[in-house]
Length: 637
Image 1 (cartoon, rainbow, N blue to C red):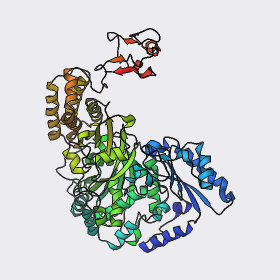
Image 2 (tube, rainbow, N blue to C red):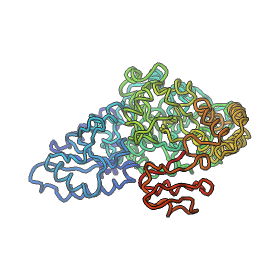
Image 3 (tube, rainbow, N blue to C red):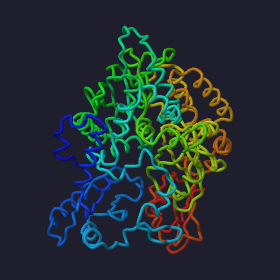
Image 4 (cartoon, one colour):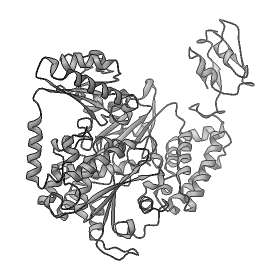
C-alpha cells in the first residue's frame, strides 16, 4: 500500500539527479533478507477472493514480525494482473519467483509456513505442464509466459500499483526526467516516429504523425486560437471480452501517467484527461491515487522537474456507452454533451476538445511511450514487423485453455498465441475460428492460423487489430450466431445519429435472426452484402463503418454454414434452437430414466435399464434432457 511518505511528500523531485538520489535512497532501505509475497489483485484474481488472501498474508507477516527467529523481513504486497487469469488467484514468493496458482484461503498458512519461513516448495500448488506433466516453479518455465514479450506489462505482477516508491524503484519517471532534461519536444516526436509506434486503440494510426499535427496546428474551431492544447487518454474500453486497458490502469497506473506527461510536453498541452468507464472502479481508484502521488512528487503540476513545463491530469468517468470509445463522441461527452460522433472533415488534432487542438490515444499507446524514451527508438523498433513495431496486449478468452492477459511481439502467428500461450482449445475440441478486433472485427478460420498478427495482415484477412480482444471459438460454435451476437451488441450501442448505422445494423440483425430461426431465404445473403457496403460507405463513424465485419468475414470463410441454415433448416454446430434435434445414443444409454423423469413434455419413453427414445413430434428442444443426462447419452444432431 502507499506509504505515509508517498502520501505527504511535496515537490521532493526537481531533476533527474534528485530522482536518482531518491531511487538510491529507496534501494538502501531495502533489507537484504527480505521475503516478499506478491498477491495478484487484478480483476480476475480478485473475483476469486485474492483480496482476502492478501489480508491473510499481511496478518501472517505482522504476527510473525521479528519473532521468526532470524533477521528475515517478511512483506506482503498486492500487485496487478499476472496474466494467467484462468488459474488465479496467483501468488508469487520472492526470492526465487515461486509461482503458486489457484490459491485458496486454507493454503495461506501452509505457503507461509513452508515457503516464506521454511524455504520449501508446496508442490501441489505449482503449475504442471500438461504435455510433460512436470511441475515447474517459475513463470519463465511456463509456456504461457515464456512465449510472450512484455513491455507494457513488464511491471504488472511485480510492483504495488498504489506505491509510487515501487514505480520509482524500477526506473519509473526516469524517461520523463530524460525527456524534460535533455530533449526538445520535436526530439520526442522524432523518437516516437522512429520507433514506429502506431495507436493501439484500434485504428493503428501513426502516433508521431498525430502528435506532430497537433503541435503544429492552430485552433480552427469557433474558439479563438490561444495556444491551448489538450491531451486525452482513452480508457473507455468497451469490447466484449476485453480487459487489456483495464489491467494496465489497475496494475501500473504510473506508467500511463508518465507516458501522458511526456506526450503533453511533446505537443505543448497543459491539461490532460483520462476518460475511464465507470465499470472500472479499481482502475479509477488506482489512477486517482497515482495522480495525487505524482502531484506530491512534482511530476504533475507547475514547473515539473524544474523544467518550466506545467501539466495536470483529471479523471472523467464514462457512462458505459460503447460509441464513446470513438474520439469525437468521447470529446463530446467530456464537454458535457451527448456522446455522439461528428464528421471529421476537420480533424481533432486541429479542433477537438472545446474546439482546441487535441491528441487522443488509448491507455496502451501511452504506456508504450516511457519505454520508447527509456530504451531508445531503435531497440523498440527491433521488435515486431516492418509496418507494426513493438508488442500488442491481448485479452485471450473464449474456448481456450489458458484465458488471460498476454503481450506478444507484433508478427507472432495466431497459432503460437492460441496453441503455445493459450494451451489450445478446451476439452480437446477442434479449433474453428478466432475473432479479433472486438465487435467490429472479423472471424479468422483455421486455414489462416499461421498468419502474422499485425495491423496490415489482420486487415487483409477481413478482421482488424482493434484494441486487443481475441475470442477463440471451437467446433461447437455457430458462426451465423456469432455474427448475430455482435450485430445485436452494435445495434444496442449505436448512438442512432446517422441513418446508415441506425437502420442498416437493425436490418442486418433482422436478417440474421430469420436465418438462425430457420426462416432465411437464399436472397438474404445478397441482402447482407448490399447492406454491408452501404454501412461502410455511409456511416458517420467507425462503429457503423466496421459493423459489417463479423458478417462479411463469416460469409467469406463460413458461407456453407449460412447456406445450411437457409436450405436445410439445420445448424451444423447444433447451437441454433429449432435447427437440430436431440437423440438418445442406444449404445451409451443405461436406461436410468433420469431424462424421462425430467422431460417437461413427457417426450421420452423407455423401460428401466433399456435404451430410451425421444418422440420428435412432442420434443420442444428445451435442452433439459441434455443437461440432466449423467452419461452423455443425449446427442444433438
